[in-house]
Length: 477
Image (cartoon, rainbow, N blue to C red; front, side, top):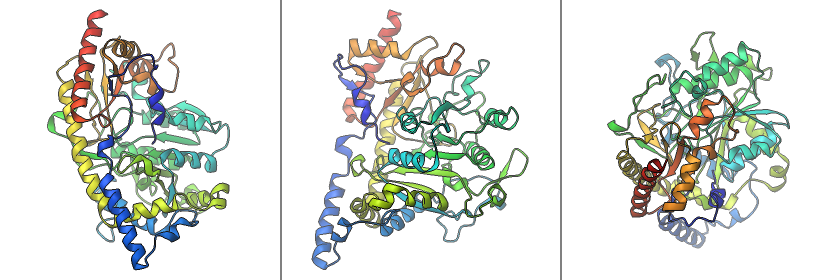
């Protein structure tokens, strides 16, 4: 998702020397040579008569067919080893050794990015007054999209809500069992939509385990809740090193070397009356047998290629895609980014995207470990590692300060005295701090650091300055 709004905060009165706040890719790491190669190939196509010029015209409502086919092939290839869980007899069938075959028919719809995808889903599937439940913390700009559609944004129950639970390692974890109990036993109405970031979360960097995904999907399917997953970081990951595995008191998660599958793959679940769910067609949950499934994956090329292409996708059950195709302005203008879709189809078909993404993952893994190793020099700062699987990913490192340290106060001190800018945890909480609010207090003792934007040497200097600012701040308290 776009984070362009980040550049306007914190206040401009401070001179920023090091920016660990902005969630952007490094300018020098964008696919400059790859784009030149694509443009060169386009010129050669023109000479052969296989012209790209037709893509300057209107396109299909769901997006160019060639691009959607290429994208589906790319996604199947990059996720073939993803873990959907269950015993062997519960696994979906594999017909070609690569793509997961879901019993719930699904399609791709091309968008202008994740934010555009959320906008379209809100416009076509919700009405003013509907509730959307979100995590605490969450991607800080997403609630504005929901609010612009007059949706009531409310917090999901979080593990850190419980005052008797040690918050260490719990920040950002949804208390799924309590959510189920509230709706199914306590009479709280289920929301219209749940918005989550299940893979390499922004801001915490953590992921949902397969078990957690199965529980959420089963709940959503039982109650016809739209489970919308922002999966912009899903493909941008790497294996953890042994010292990056956290030791948590009660993770209730499955630790595997495989990446948990995207949320859309859990549409074929039904509830069997116990704590477990099975991967079978859930034909009883809808009177219209063609309207099965409510788990939706939304993603884009923003993080795995370049934000400037403004191109993304919605992966969802076919009946949802049909509603998107019939939406007024889509029906009027035709598909989104027809020409750019042709460019990205070429990037996929020529393996430019695969090769670029592989290089990006190596670079980001090295940057992540570089910053973590520096942060480990300060024992009072805890680093939030992913505990759902033996993989890490995304753009951010979430750090927890000692109890009583307010990250907004530290940010002001850091900017004024060291010129180091980062995102205070409270910026990622869309809800005001309440009187009895252990989750809100915990979030406000944390910070988000971006490791992708700065050049490497600058990143080292910025992290060192961050640590120096923290030690000085703690001395001054």
